[in-house]
Length: 344
Image 1: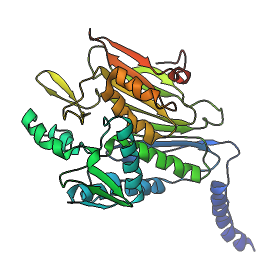
Image 2: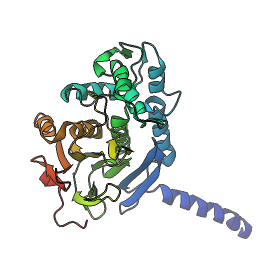
Image 3: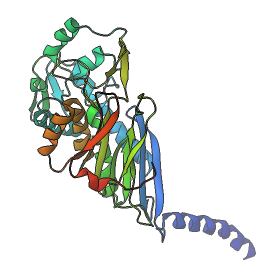
């Protein structure tokens, strides 16, 4: 009997350990998964009694998203569309992103246009950096390939009007990815979380167990240079999403000018507007991400015109005044998100 008790004892210890790991904690804990995907980093934080989501599950979702939407993967669905003569059958990821992109294209008067890929590559912001800047003649040759009016959705098929049309959904894909991750968490009964992919964020609920609001910092460039950002405002958005587009984040220099990675699809040239950062709050990240570039390209007056027709969207705009100093402005409802006297 003595030897039997000794042999069973270690098994009982192991079983107790497994059961305790699966049993919900009495007090909600903080869980966090981080990694790299879509050419950037991601961080998923949630507050719950049980860790019901794994790194392997998250990475599998990102793999599925990249297989559809990444222009950096030669075999991805979007790459196959760009290489095709007429078009392809879409999966659910590409279909949702293209449909939303087409809607935003119409609602911004063409300022947001996913067919700018040939221009993005010409200006050196694609997979390979260009050796030299394009001249006006080179841009004119590319313009017949640009314009979302050259795209058509026929059932589940995305069709191009001319073979040279190519699309780049990087300006909206990360927002869509954030929404996909948020829906995944909610499907696992997680109601308090923050999802961040490349700086695009969606939050729901509060930090537990203290029920603190989740705070997010808005970057500001230095008043003299673009390479020393700080925190200009701290916001809390409750249940919703926030994204930021900034012309100071990626640029090339030519002739003493900083050329933004955001291309104006109407001119074919990098955006040269007074707005240098546009932060958008919306119910979903795909909406915020889809509009932030357009607001930056629209300029102050154009941005407010767009916002007036989208009452569920708020924006905070940082811009450079004619004298070179930096100032800010915001839509009427944005003030409710700002945390007063927050540490900057």
